[in-house]
Length: 184
Image (cartoon, rainbow, N blue to C red):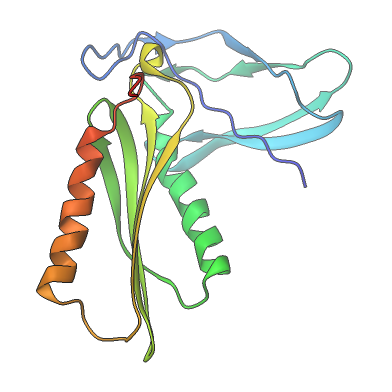
């Protein structure tokens, strides 16, 4: 099954100078869709609720989709939805994996959503922490980035203080990440 995820953002709405004016009468031209019928939903990602259904047909000309009026930035509100799908994929890959914590995150100039999970058996202790990030300002970069930390111990025993400290120090390296910078 083919899927498409669309993010809509008011480029004038930035973390350091928010623009909460309503964007109305916007249209999306959807290029790159496979020919055929497509269905979906508009979501109010801040409220976590659907706004309405979408139905369109992609053919030789890219379809245009009217965007419901919105304020600010709906992109960042989608991060919990993406994180849920990401965690579900990790749980399929690693049975008995459990979500330990989740929440919004910020790493320098990027907003994100952080998930932590663990799998503890008699023979293994696995912990993971992933941060899904998008740039706050389109001028700083495009796309998304996944920062991922993994720690595995061959026994199911709790982590020792030096092992916990290693995880803490590894997380501090997140501070070196920044969209839109070239480092050689």
